[in-house]
Length: 165
Image 1: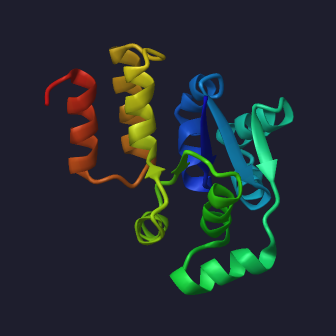
Image 2: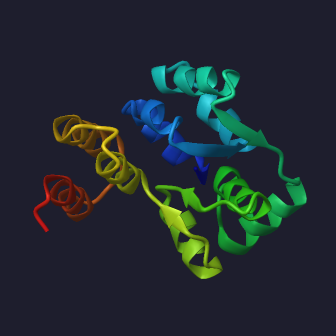
Image 3: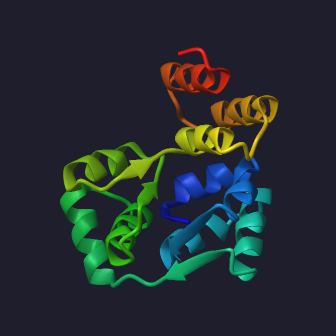
């Protein structure tokens, strides 16, 4: 099983498109208390799904020291959730960090933190045959609607799912 730390953006997007349900049996999901709080505070379907998964122990919730979070926030101009997720990645020696936040992605590159995006998680779920091509493309359309991805990123993912590379 692969250990994946999620920040709020990736956790919310994967929940919003129904991908979180497919992933919870394939990967070990880790979130910080900050990410959990940020992801469940709204009265939305995805927040309720995340809360339900958290209550059913479908992912691990961890605490990170506030000092450690603050130092990373200041040094890389990150929000609390992204900073705590990067710290958790190191704490649990995770395989990968899931984020769709541009500043967090840039920080991951600098700190040599292995990362992925919601688009890549969708692609991987299709490759692992957790989703049919039709279902994967439908979820891609939802990601395109809810996420902040460039047309190029979406088209690349679509081509990869269709096998048109």
